Image (cartoon, rainbow, N blue to C red; front, side, top):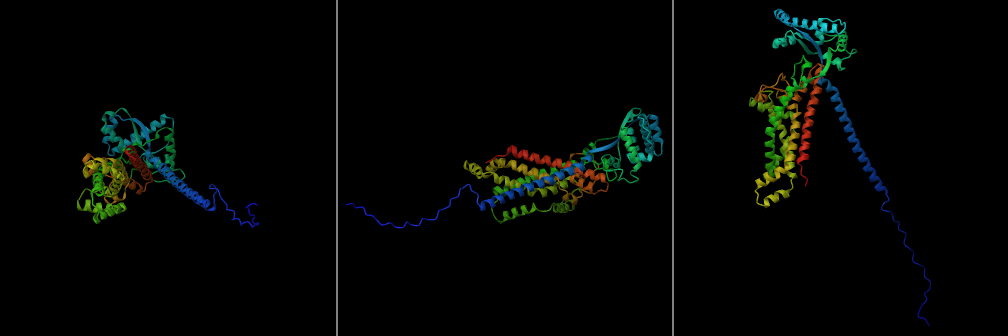
Length: 449
């Protein structure tokens, strides 16, 4: 007999509900929404960049389009010889410059006749096209008597209206008869252009010359203002770099952490956000009214811009010092170096690329400032020439590039408006150059930890 027992059939236990397993690669609704939000944010970022690039391109196009005419000028090229007898006769005349103008007009007519062109014009038309030429010709032959009797080629600047007609600023539809230019004069201009008497050449005087006053936009140049900005930047560099770096090293490496140093740090951060015109008011009150330094001098401008630049240099220098790993300091102190030696022999050389970059960027910011210069008179002064010497470059009244641009933009003649745009191009070239130098220095000496 078997021990196996037979149990009666019992109903099976109810099975648990079937669990649904999803693949890790399946995208649920929440993940889909999150991915869509990320795509939208990426699209917003790309759109913002494209909009910024679009406006940057529009700005660059506008500056180049409006400023290029400042780098060209229209000249009237006439060659003629003045004999000794003509020179002596002109010097005996009561109106000497008028006699020389007649010589010029006669030579111009002769040159047109030789080219086979019959162009009717009178003396008044020539004055509207070229201006008073007698004084220029007289001064040349008085300064160069050895040129009497020899053919001399004169390149006389045409009037601003003629120059505007050549570069498209003045058209036959927009011009109105005035004492500066008449519609009939445009026929003379076209004939002179065909005879190659009127030409468009590169305007070196704009780069090397000085301001010519409100009546001569064609002779205005930015060269003297570039020199003024150069002397101002020398003052800023000589003062802001040592003072800013010394203050940064003390605050970052040696100063105790207390309320006094916290107050100094807060004030430095606040000074970096102060409007630049406030520094101009401070410079007017302290350097001119109290210390009686010469008004409109690059020395005063440099002192004012130094005050404005110091917070920027201090903040960037402290950031460069903080970027040096603490292990460098600990290693130097561990082998017996003093705090001073660890700072100046190890930390400062490693932080120097960032310090130089911050300094150059601070100088670039100071180079483009106009508001502080308004208060110390550098906008009201018209620089008609270069300084007489190196010391005079600091102490004699002069202008600066942003101040000169502001002055040209405020004048009524549209030709000065073109000069202002051209000055902006020159200023941007300097700023871009300084920024490129900062990038090169940072890439060249940068250490990655």
